[in-house]
Length: 240
Image 1 (cartoon, rainbow, N blue to C red):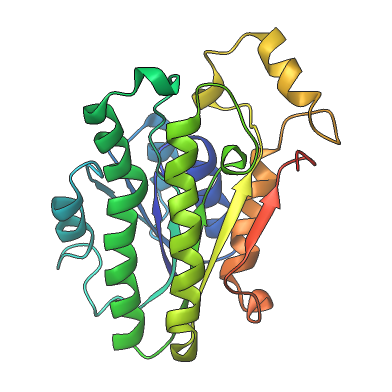
Image 2: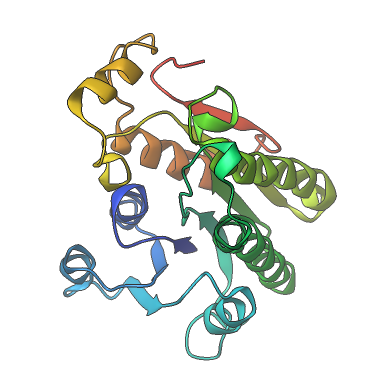
């Protein structure tokens, strides 16, 4: 199966790519930078395809991804994983409209456009497909400074649920994976004390494992999840 993955360069996106490749899929990875980890993944692996794309420019990103040299309609997509995200953290009384718009371009508007063309590809090839959006537990439980980021993920969850209802009869499924707090580059600025406070809010008293998130994504993309659509799947170490 051909699967498009955004935000492929590191963290969850990189782990998703590794998991899907191990399962025998062809992965079309998109991110701004071709990191050393991605280069290692690509070495001698003809099933991995990469394109550098700025997802902050929604129209240009759509044109770059669904282009003749990357994913034309002759490449039938079976899956789309919308993982790329930008974090804008600050308290509400400090909101900057420019920063808010920039985050929404990456987290909401570009994913919507890519979903549009992914579905068109799936319908053109008459194969249906599975869409998986990566959200955040912050959309369901409060963290100081994450109101703006959480709002973008909440918008994505609503979009996914309605996409599932709209296109299910064409064999297109849409689900959301909602990870809890993970120990990734995105959280690297936090101190150990801050991380431990977050872990204590979970049932398992530890960080959500990146591998567990990636494996859940792979399951939702597979035929094993053929009756699952319009759902939010929490992979959060019991935060909620």
